[in-house]
Length: 214
Image (tube, rainbow, N blue to C red; front, side):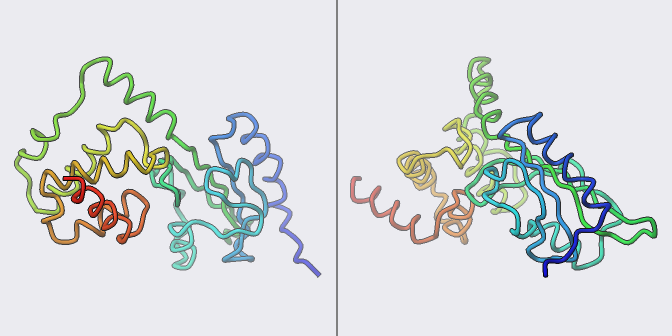
């Protein structure tokens, strides 16, 4: 016999549907029942944003907070990325019963990828594009800061979120980074692989392609 959902959580199901329909396909709305953790989703709208559905688990951040019992404060307007590299703006609201026991949470994950593309187009039109070499030559505190800046500025120069990048565009990014000596920095392969949402072996393959052509 399936477990009955707490009445307080049941009241949120129509809200999940309503908000999802109001704000459209880029706005994922999720309702979690913590008694079903880790597979805690009991209602979801626009699950295409993170690729989840009813019965799927919560995000790693929320799961960590729940496991620590750290549910007193809601988490508002934090950013992150989906598994395929979509830029997300998220908020998590914890739901409690009359005695203060946390029953679950109500989450909104907004996919900002299309807005990022639009912003980059506007920035380009207003001539505020960053210069990679100037950015890399600024005073920085650590080698890791140099790598982080190089990678971010190089990706921004393409004008797309990572989720929208083609293989050729990713190879182009790796080529620019290689030209600037980014891969001479310790840990660069793993870092770039993580940011581009590919494996470290894929980065090695890209580098092999690039260096053969050179």
